[in-house]
Image (cartoon, rainbow, N blue to C red; front, side):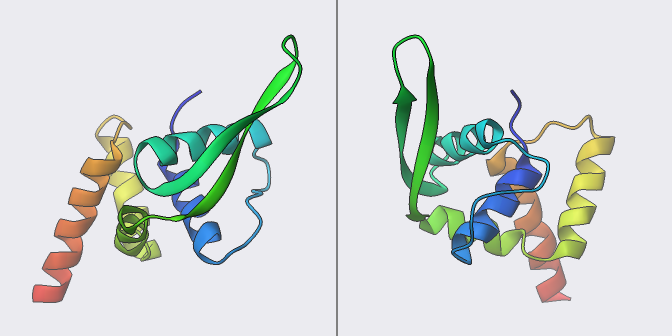
Length: 116
């Protein structure tokens, strides 16, 4: 499974708004995987738990809250115009992007807009 920054952004928005962490067309397994990545990246606080038995179990994630880093990423990616531009440029560059680099790029664009 791959990291999906667009889904991560959507999940951050839902956590901030205290909405259900369901997304049309996205499985619970995929959402839980992205949530685990978000915990590892320091964007959210949460816990992983397993449901089922030794032979057939499913991993789920309980989200506690956004971290300061999560709020920062959310603020940097809040503008749909900048986010769309970011996704377009990322696709042209080959499609791969880390959360840290995404934050740096979005930060530099926002800074330029503010200083105009």
